[in-house]
Image 1: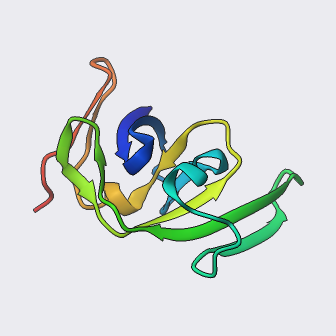
Image 2: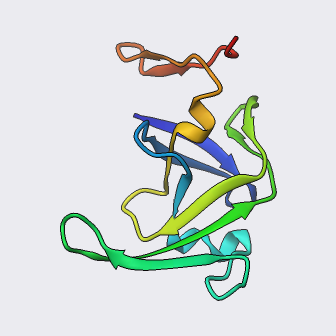
Amino acid sequence: MFLSLAVGALGSIDVEVDTGGDVLNLDAGHAPTLGVRPDDSAVRRVEGRDETGHGYVRCFTQLDETIHATGAPSIAQTGTNVMFQEIVYDGLIGDALLRRFVVTYDLPGERMIFPPAD
């Protein structure tokens, strides 16, 4: 399942919904567009191997701008923790944004419904 997400200078991108993740994960190729440099002191860099044995480089930082579901500015987050890594998709959105809402997944209608959480 994908969600269109407005992310600063990137504009609207489609991100995979990943309820098992927490931080917003963006493809490393988007970092320069968002003004993020891996060698910046505000960026924490982690290198390792994943469970399949493939090497990775992950860069963690915080985006100051507000991100929101495209066309739905009330489904938003400011000061978003983000991880940049080489991935197949533009990004993955996780629990950090979703947990603030009671999300209904309408699979036949191919949509997600986000009323505010009580």
